[in-house]
Each structure stands twice: as C-alpha cells, then as structure tokens.
Image 1 (tube, helix red, strand yellow):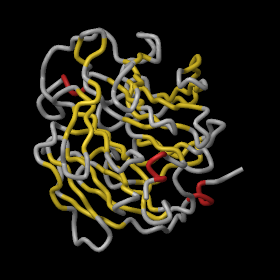
Image 2 (cartoon, rainbow, N blue to C red; image 1 turned 60 degrees about the vertical axis):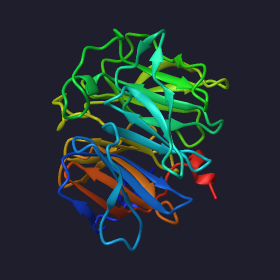
Image 3 (cartoon, one colour; image 1 turned 60 degrees about the horizontal axis):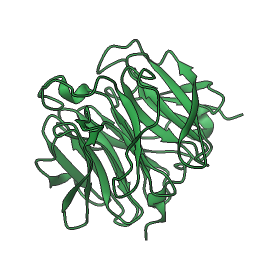
Length: 301
C-alpha cells in the first residue's frame, strides 16, 4: 500500500517557471517537442516553455480563452475553448480546425477539460463556466439545458453524450486509469469524483462516487478542478490547499501544498516524472517518484 512519501519526496523543490499570470490552466506536455504549453485564460494567451528557456513565451494570442488541452499521438493538440464553446485542434504550423461545436443542433456550453483514449477518440467535459462572465469566457445564455461529458471520433464525428443529463452539476476534470478500464470525472460544486467503467466500445457504464469532500464548493478556491492519474492508478486532483493524491481504493494519501489554488496539472519531462502545476498566477514544476499513466500522446516520436 503506497504512502504519499512513496510517490513524492516531501522535500522535493518547487521550481517556478513563470509568474504574473491571471489564472493559468490546461498544461499539456509534448513528447515530440519536449515542451510544455499552458493557458492564462483571462489574458486570452497560450504560453510555451521548454527546458533551458528562462521563462515561458507567448505561443498563441488570442487563444479563445483556452482551458484544458491535450496532445494527440500525431503531434497535434486539442483545446477546450471557453470563448467559442468548441473543441479545436492545432497542428504544428498553428492551423486551427474545429473538432466539436454543437450537440443536437445547439452550441456546447464551454468545453473545459479533455483526454484521448488509445483508439484516439476524444472525451471532454462541458460545464457552463465559460458563459458566466467575460473573464474566463464570454457571458451569454447557454443553449443546452444540461452539463455533460461527451465523446467523439478523432475527426469530430459521432459526438455522443456519455452520461445521463442529470449526472453532473458542473463536470470538470477527467482522466483514465492506466489501463483505460475506468474514467474518473469530478463535479466541482458537489466536491466529489465519480468513476465509470469504460466498455470496449468506449461508452460508459453506471457511475459510482469514488471520493467525496474535495473542498467546500467555493468557486475558484475550494473545488476539484484539473485531475490526472499516475502509472500506479493514483488520482492527483487539484483542490483546496494543493494537489490531493487519492489511491485507487479512494483513500486520501495526502495533499501536496501549492502556493495558490492549482487549476490543473500534467506530467512531462524525458521520463514523465516531472509534474507541472498551473497554480493560479504561477506555473511550477516538481519532481515525483512516479510517472504519468500512459497516454496516447506518449507514443509520438
């Protein structure tokens, strides 16, 4: 049975990569380029950083209030855009195409976080936070009357709602278990994480509550947000006070303190044992003893 000390050295140094942002989100690591990208949502800017760089540099501006991001096996990357309510794809030349934008003829709410499966299909959450105000999106009324979790093919076709329409209040972070047999999705205002069995065809079985009490529900400071899984099946979730680490049985192993509320996180580096954390106005890295769960983008060469 693992302890938190088995996963990260208590004395591990937090290395600040950049500061002075408004609210950072969506870190994603490119194995092909050995580089990190992340967004400052209110500043409408995407940044890039690679080892040896003195600080992150502007990569894309404007970025349509980009939120969650993930690289694909081909080297392209997907972006959840709060301003436009779409999932978009960017290639190495910066060309943008829309992958998903409407469900049953209505605009999506504001796609928030995103993952890919080994068959390259795309899963994303769709709360309506990006319609609340012009800071993290664009204020406007929603067209959908629910907040769901969706799946589509790599080309964006066959967009499917994977959960009942009343399953979540505001679905946010999501991640697969290492063998992709389970999908974890957190619900920010309800402060819990649900887990679903993933069927062979990519659809989801019934849910169960995996972990409760991840905050108080206060937006922006005491709710679950971004979430990732390590190679041993432990869940690393942003929450009040830092990164909460929860083992596969649902036991809270401890919390890694962060200087500010951590919006999201991802592993990177040559051995995928460097954890990059978007902590509100700063971005930092810290070494861990455990690596990321395998992701399709790790096959990129």
